[in-house]
Length: 445
Image (cartoon, rainbow, N blue to C red; front, side, top):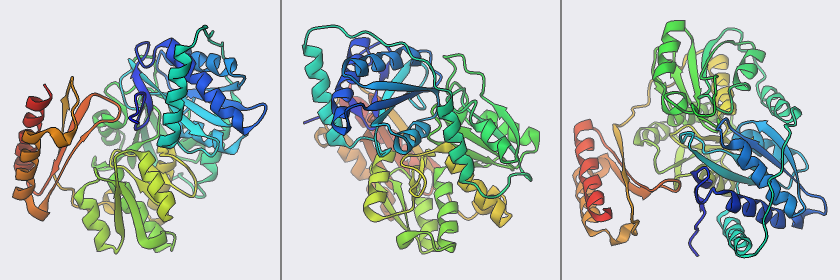
């Protein structure tokens, strides 16, 4: 059975429109309540949100649906996605719901669900929820939204947890933090200041509409300028819900999720804390990461795109670290999802304990030129049916041989076909990516 509502990271869309229209969101809450009641007679669900202007009414719609199903809600207010996951698994919540569309613009929003263990729901449970939602939509009766009051102690517990995971001191560091006008804007500066760093914060003026707007993990140019202007040791950029982090070195170099996997993976191996001498990443991670890990006798295991699938492989294989090039990094000993602030702390631990800069720690990874082209479509067709596209893919792969990679996939959150090509020379990579993208435009028009 194909999924109709859930993508690779929950239910996502334009707030107020299908599937995030009020009636369906309330039905989602009731469906979740019916699922949650298997875990006790008085279950509670925690809800958090980022800074989007639609967050409050969506949270209250979910809470209304939960109340209709006899389930109570505690509201964490503005908090990060990993913050909701942490609260769900460490307190008596049967589930957690994060209202966020992560790195998307403010018009979009989403519903991310965690079960009582802090893990995102597996595909089969999402399918069960979908079936229940549609059943509820077909039934009569309306559901009222439920007003929510923020429980101010919940986000403080999360920050306390993060602070406890760093045993050293950041007294010697000057850092710039870009919070993307998102969920981390009042948490990240507090955390790093508390640990002793001199913090210059940007992207901390959320107005409900400027989340991720020319700032944060997807737009690091302003962060780079501030790092250089401030003479900072490094910069940290989060996305809107802070489940990912990207970094800028003191010399202005971008240090992405692949670099983090290499730096921290090597550090864990040196301490005897890298089970199986392996790191888990997705098919999007750069070929340069694979080559650098091989040089350090570390195996790279690849999964489909999505931190949920990275985590599933980590649990299956016992891996300690895994993540995505985009900055989602999971540390299995401390978290059940990507956590940008925890990632920053783990990277800062390597910097301070080894007394080396980010530039030095990442200097030996050769990043292969990689081009990602998005092709928007109206009518999705299975890739196996796109003969022109498949011919273009085969031609590009034959030209690169073992010196490059081609990946074509459909986004799980947007109506986009994504073409990724990487190889040793940028012009050849660009030409190959555009050849495949043009074939997709023809066949998906």
